[in-house]
Image 1 (cartoon, rainbow, N blue to C red):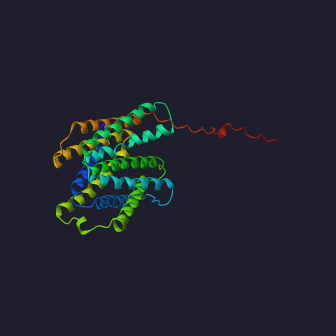
Image 2 (cartoon, rainbow, N blue to C red):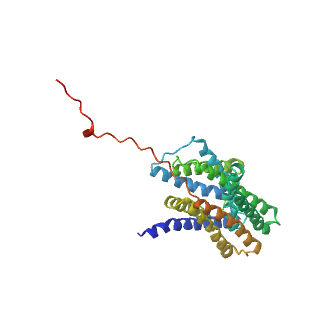
Image 3 (tube, rainbow, N blue to C red):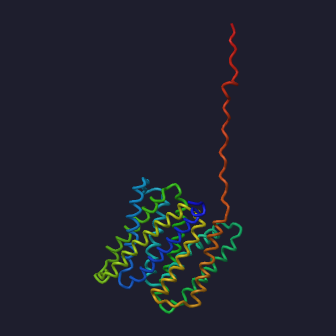
Length: 318
């Protein structure tokens, strides 16, 4: 296999993962009117937990539970993000949710602007402002209904908690990635399962029985899990910062599904909003890819051993 083919594989993995996640979002939106959103979220994350646990055990990864504390920070934030995302997917068009939830690089940039104050931050702040105005433009078609406005806000909460999870993930380099995914998906499965059992018990009307709805639920679990696999392969085989920007192609796939499958009619404010959000997000991500990394410090050169043949031999006197 040529070097060029090898360099294109990570991009192919990421675009394939984006297609899977857009498919999952479209299926979630389709089945959302016939099934409780929390059940959909549970099926999705439990599928990921089973797969990641099998993958970790098969690969000999050391599973972790209590330490380090950052692992819990990442898993709790990820659990909130999953719940918010699936709530929004059942109430808003797929492309809108994918756009809103993928604004997390802007929140990471805003955190850096507020706490570090390094040079070049005004450009970052301009990106954040442009993204926020883009969110307002996307929200315009949903402004007439309070439920939809609430879903927009919840999608943004998912984005912020994703940013928190990513910041935590950056500090978990010493923990095997498979163990991190298993911990997060296990905590999310347990949390959503307990929520279903006690705080949000399902009624018979919340559980679909028709074959079409059951097939969509199965598709949500399969497409989400396959997307996770492809995402992992992409990040494992290519530069993460350069590959990450390709994940935004899921918005394009989501728009195609909205128009072709759900009969959506795109408006000019929505299109402008997509550009205002995705443009700064892509710019921030690609700039991170171009930023030079500090060279690792060279290890001190050990002293050269003295050769045996140059060591002066003791003079024997009689």
